[in-house]
Image 1 (cartoon, one colour):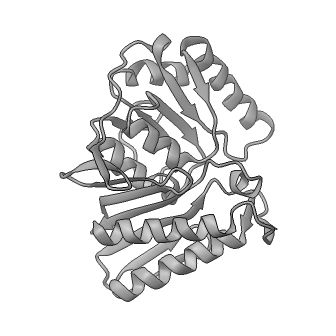
Image 2: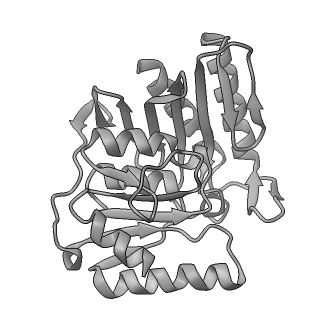
Length: 257
């Protein structure tokens, strides 16, 4: 866990080095943009991980899978989640790192460098928020009525009918909940479920690096993860409903309406 915290903060420092500076931005067809900060953060993480754990597999958003034969460990990395926000100077972005051992998630870290908030968890050992020298255990919200809940979501890069469906879901949730937000960084949204700032989060079109760390944090904080139908979900399934557990069935019903 100290190593995971170290590299999450290190990658976040790289993000802040380039934030609101003039940097190179490249289009990714059908998948938004990528910046110089994405690449620099990823390069840093790859170097650190493969030096410390040379037999590991690493999968990252920008360069894909770095495979080692016979490895039991896999690091699942989004070096900069919320790139569009970042490129526009909007301070909602993060580093997200999930760790699998023999195909099962065992640890995760999400770091928001603007607020210097590190959300970190280990399977069976809890999840915690570190800010400076302060540390507090993560617990999901106890809000049990949807009309008192704040929710988060995202629309990925859907167009046409797919976008219409997502907007319709957003509308149905907005009618029932106290508030719904679409900040634009799924990993950080999931960290906010884990710490009780959001009561729930849903999104489709996600990749493993968007959600791996969030899965660990939410489950260790006492929350629930599923697909929209309330069934078990894996990080590679592309669809996530996360909640404090108390509102999960109601959220699922609204998404399926």
